[in-house]
Each structure stands twice: as structure tokens, then as C-alpha cells.
Length: 154
Image (cartoon, rainbow, N blue to C red; front, side):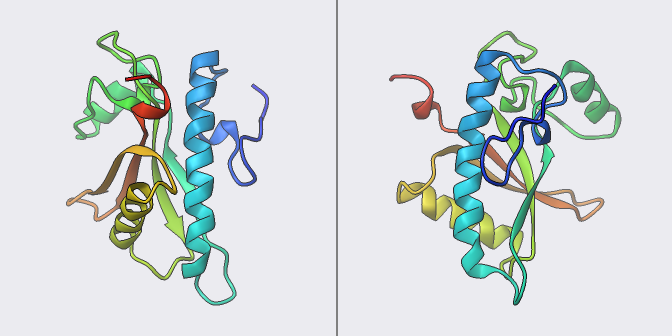
């Protein structure tokens, strides 16, 4: 798979390990474009002399990823947008990523609130913005899913 650059700061291989289908590529491009906007908006809140960065912790999932998560005690959805067109119940999915943010003065929970605000103001377009935290490990992330209105005509 080529390391296709989707935006200034995001590459395809951050979201998916295999060659994507055309549908997946379009969904991931949409997701990357919105994540790039989030990254750009967060620069206002960068720590002194630092640049905010966003890491993709979980992008496109496969059946094997789903089974690994179950085995490790997580509760992944069979209809998750992480499947990016390849979900277990054979319904279309929209693409999603779990992210972490570095070098930002805001907490991850505050960042999620900012993303929701930007979404309401039409600056970004997500269908899901969910702050999540694992109570056992204390790890936290933000789940972001594509906006179905950006994909389908309703």
C-alpha cells in the first residue's frame, strides 16, 4: 500500500493497514479533512513552543481486530463505523477513528466539547463525537465518526 497523503498532517496508512476500496478511501478522505480542521483549530490551544498533534489510535477495523478487542475485554460494536464499509452485519458504515491529542492545553474532554461546538457551528462535520475513558487503565480517547449527511442524501 502506498503511503498516500490525505491532508497536510494525515496519511492513509494512519487509518488503514491494507489497500482501501474506493468507498473506504472516500470515507477516510472525508474523515481526514475534518480531522485536519480540528488540528488546525486546536493550534490556538497549543502548549508554549509546541505544535498540537493528533494521533489515530484506531482507524479501520477488520473482523480480526473486532475479535482481538473482545478477547481483551472491550465491548466493540458489531455495527461500528470503524469497519468503514466492512461491518459484521452487512450494513453500510461511515468511517470512524479514535484519536488522542498531544501538546494541547485543553483536556481531552474539553477538546471533545470544542469539537461538538465547532460541529454545531458548521466548522467541522461529524456524525459522532464521543469522549471515552477506560476505567481500568485510565486511558482516554475521542471517537469521531463521519457525518452521514456528508455521505448520503436524505
